[in-house]
Amino acid sequence: MPSCSALPELTDEQIDSLPPEVRQTYRQPRAVDPAELVRFLGHTDLVNAAWAFLMPVYVDRDLLSVWPNVDPDFRAVLAQKWVRDNHYQMTVDGWNGEAVEAALAGPPDHPLWVHLERVHVRSFRAMLPDPATWGIGSATRMVAPGVEALYVLDASALEGGLWQPHDPRYVCPVLMHLVDRRWLVRNLGSESDPAITT
Figure 1 (cartoon, rainbow, N blue to C red):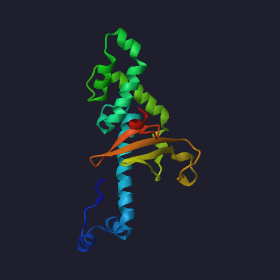
Figure 2: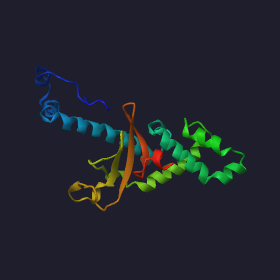
Figure 3: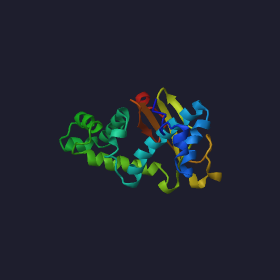
């Protein structure tokens, strides 16, 4: 479980010595039910990890810098898909498909990496709404132990800015996997677990 201590514990005297506009930030969590606070802070970690992946991919078209934030199973799925889609040309060019697939799923230092990145960034961007309108639903769905689905949506089209589960508007699922106290992207555009579907 990720650390739930987003703010350092301060004594009442320390809080009183803070500027008035900051005091409430430290007092408010004390008034929340401890179980709800754990859930909220855990959700915050989950959402922050999703944003840390989505923003570079969508805005900067950069999968390279966030590849370490991708679950190894999803890396393997992405590499496998790219190799299958390009198998003929790779064979003509003398590449061994299995070796390329294994290399692309690892650290991004293979000569064909740039092509995998370009194709998957284009695909991911096509699934997502404009980032200026992004929202992430507060409801998540547990898919498996340590695997949660959250939903990116176009918040500009929501009445009151709130999305409810089963709302028919388009949402883009992001599957996240907790590995060694770190959330990794396990799938994008589907709630299917790559470990189950491959």
